[in-house]
Length: 78
Image 1: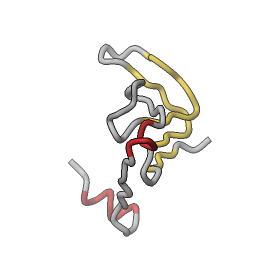
Image 2 (image 1 turned 45 degrees about the horizontal axis):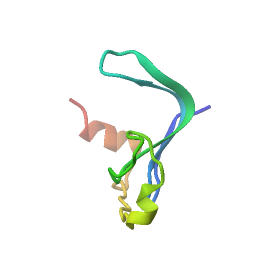
Image 3 (image 1 turned 135 degrees about the horizontal axis):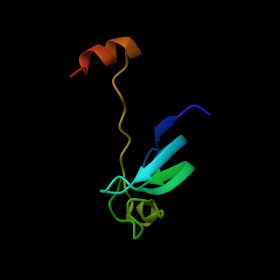
Image 4 (image 1 turned 120 degrees about the vertical axis):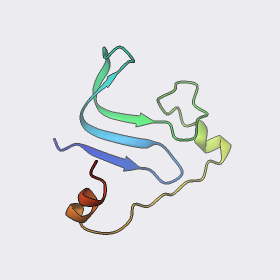
């Protein structure tokens, strides 16, 4: 399964693939195939989404700049 990060319009950040969520000590908290992470900051289950954004009317539809992957990588190198 290919790793994928998707920003859901007016909703959470969805991570699909082989991800491990680790705490501040580096310990694995969860290992799942799909995570939905809160972007509105209103979830009672942070960092996970509990759909609080729906009742709150959260609105955010960010878009990444268009271009090639190789061009993006060269502009973000350290």
